[in-house]
Image 1 (cartoon, rainbow, N blue to C red):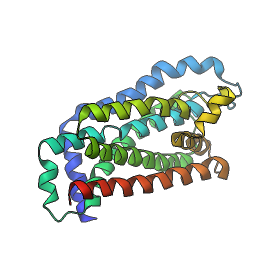
Image 2: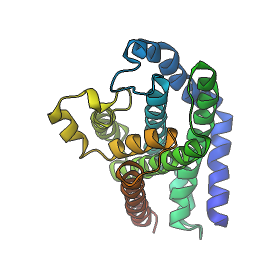
Image 3: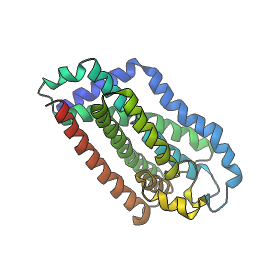
Length: 250
């Protein structure tokens, strides 16, 4: 835990010294909130937005999108550290290989939580009416999403060691995974074949659970399955990524 704390703080200092990334992380969800959400007002009261307020459905999906994208850039940082010899220096220390990974993962989780909390507070005056305990559970679940994508991206950075190869894989998977998860529009509006494809997307279960938690509903069909899928995926990804660090930094 000491190693994790030290390496997390090192990553946090890097982020604080480059505040443009913090501002960018907050700007993107606010633009979605201000420029896209109003387009959905005419759907209020439909089967996709039964409670009448589109933000009650749209915002949890937006937060899931933010959580997913917050960890995607981790691999670029790992490649930069490989090329500048930082990983080479760290590997001769007695630091835990899990800590080498998890310090950066925790930084990405914080980078998600701060803008996510601000977006929720801004959305409340515009009609977002969440369950407070549900929002806390929602943010906890989405922190696991960020941890998973951060660890996955970091491991790919260690494997490819090349920005071009990493970018091809990440961008190639990011768009279909986000579209099939229904982050912007509920998949209840989609045809049956598209809903069928969504069941193969782990992010879909996180979005479904996030919307249920936002409404204050805790059920096995959405929240239980979402926690199970994302929790298991987080454990598997962290284990795999730690092994990648052990191979590169024995």
